[in-house]
Image (tube, rainbow, N blue to C red; front, side, top):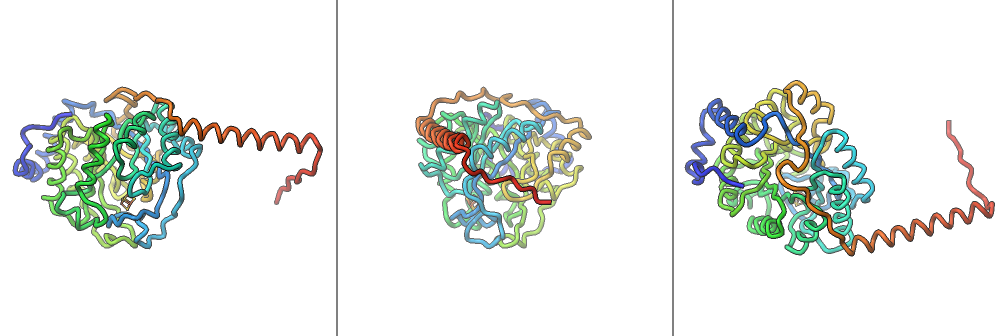
Length: 367
Ligand code: SF4
């Protein structure tokens, strides 16, 4: 994954960001055509496998336990339910599933075992699997990789300087460390930021410069527009102008020609024309499905209609890298065995009851 050497200094990158928009878009569209098929857009579906109750204080996030946001909090979803949602996403054209859990960091517990099992199952369905689970160490990254995880998402959100204005419960450096752990085990990295949190242009470009200075920049860079949720500290932030989103996408596309630039949160606030400009400027991926973790997103059918108008097609999985192999995970095998034994016991008990002709509650239909 290469960077564009022309923009490896902050000065040059800022100059690029401030290029007259039509010129910037033309430049981005030209580079986009050199490295990507401009008529293909990756559809990725985000599933919130554990929602809310997070101990962090990210100022934009309704999932933080510190804010009163009337969020529908739920514990870890059962594996079967997640698989069902992934199947539905696949049927609707998604080639990638990203599973998000509102955790500060991954813990080696049964919930993590379930995530590993979900990764195995979804990779087995021939979809790219991504996860966003907070901070993780190298062993945890390795376990996910062995399960068949394709990518790990860990956003830097903004520049190192602005980061402390929106989050106080962890350091920018810790984010970079987790990205490093994903890299060490060979995972593809998805990392990007949010516009509209009150940051300056220098912070937007500053975040991109952090990626420029990485040994290997992210394969995927999501650009989100803040969805200001009532109850969070950023609830009164004004909507970010679509022109800023287009500009940031074009700048990212030019600076990271090979990466996937993702048009992420905030699409419901954009018109079809605005989204079309983003694709023109080099966005090559969207999140599909009616929810983006906890905030609204266009429905699958709205995206299908937009794709038809623009002549776009969903990108097939594993175009940019091989499908990972799924290795046996002992903890998951043990959990599956226990579950199968329990199901068998329940079934046997039911059959025994029926054969004895014992009382069975009658089904009652309520009109
Ligand atoms: S962004 Fe992630 S880490 Fe921050 S509060 Fe939300 S769920 Fe927690």
